[in-house]
Amino acid sequence: MSRMPGAPHALFSAAWLRMAATVAAPHAPDPGSGSAVRIGLRLTDASGDVADRVLLLADMATGALEFTAGEWGERPAMTLALSRADALVLLFGDGEQRVRLFEHGGLRLEGVFLFVFFLDRVLQQDPAGVVARLRELTAGPPPRGPEPTGGAASAGDPAVAEGEALDHARERLPLTMAALRHELGRTTPGAQLYVSGADTTVSVALGEARPGVPFTRDALPIWYCCSKPFGAVAVGQLWERGLLDPEHPVAAYLPWFTGDGRETVTLRQLLTHTSVVPMGLDPLHGSMTAPLPLRREQVRTMAVPRDATPGSKITYAPWWAWFLLSEVVRAVDGRDYERYLAEEILTPCGMTDTRVVLAPEEYQRLAGRLPLIHITGGGLPSQPTHWFATEASCTRPVHGLNMRGPMADLGLFFEALANGGLGRQGRILRPQTVAALTARHRVGLRDDFGNADWGLGFRVESRYVAEECTAFGHHASLRSFGHYGLWTSAAFADPDAGLVVALHLNGKTWQEDHQRRLIAVCDAVYRDLGLDRAATVHPGGPGRALTLPPPTVTADQATSPDGPER
Image 1: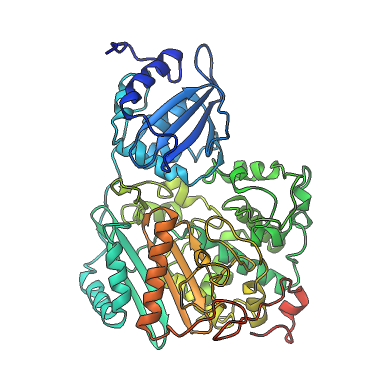
Image 2: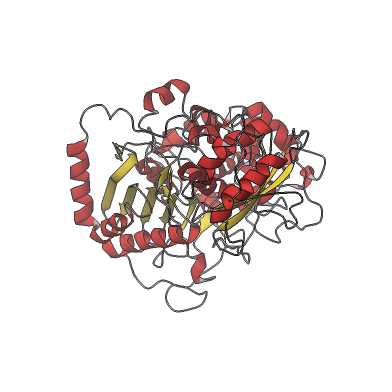
């Protein structure tokens, strides 16, 4: 066996790469494995014999790593452009340090962002021992901080009230609770659920929110993309007031969003995720929690591909689309997005515990009790992470992504929509506008993640397209609408069944696992409440007939008293 050099070497130098090859050899990942992911690392400040391009092959199931310098050939699943200092943090920092890389705006990412979460777990747990050995042989790795821990318990003892809520849930939703318990300790450490329908209301929490901290009904989990329907409703309100039109380009409201094809992007494309900007080229991938001015400049200068046709495929936009929508709301109304949502949506719905963004003092008070996302699935142990739990990511608004609140509050929002736009404390939309937003504006498209029909900012039940396009369960009517939240949260309203469900699982697992567990819980809710009637799965098939609304609903129809009531 060759002897290892004793002195540490610069990251990605020729000597370091030779050491990495020797260290990784006993655990070399199989490139053909379904769990091996190709990640391109490009140093922006390489010098001397330090390689500026390195391909990292990471097996997300075994922790095996392999580093190769030079051209990548086939495009990696994910590419990160970063400084040498940031590359050291990426590979050898702790979980919180790694998350903070996405807060300063100096890192650029292209490709499938979701792999970042699972790479984070591999680097934290280091099951193959490669990271620890390389750390010893690398010059200048950052000191590691503590792993995520629990915090102070809630004021008072919530055990009695939480126990009563659990008893009520077990009595009224026995199959649902059994489905949730089946996932505890397997795909998620904890859960929070709200259900209303069939003369029943259940709000319950179980398991852990973070290590050593029980999940309670008043905990504030992050909603991820379940935050997006709020932006859609804001657009609907301004549409009612005649201040904007979803068919118009974004540039009609943001004159600075022009050039390089930006003037072709419409509000409808943003709301239906049908623009020609691929998800992998989202300009905010690497800086979604960076300071607002920096993010605004990155969106202002983004380029729009000119060799594609809008509406020809699904191009889900997790960051930049809702950033633009928030800017449109601010330009048209005058209030910033956070204040607008709080005053025009949260207050009328009675959502007193929801925060569009946490104030710094709130974060300091709640930090030890905020639910943490845990990476699960894939054969490795569950890993609590700092993703979207640091001060910057909680106190800087990430539009369409980092709203927080109990599932009971999220349920109030969908109850208002199911009630024709009437919330508990006031109206948020006219019935015609609710119908317009939740109509099928995107039809005939599907992607590899089960996304199919879409409204204006809302996922629509698409079981009739294919089994894998089932959104809210096998018993949900085809008029059901809602949203998912990055393989953790889901919320929807079924107007035909008079049902609202809001669910958060703080274990982020692979998409297939999440789809299975979500559908299992939703199906159980319908059975528990006696709502599991025969549902139409094909247009014109047996049962209730499916009538697709026209793909375009005009502003006049949305705002006129004689518009399309449903």
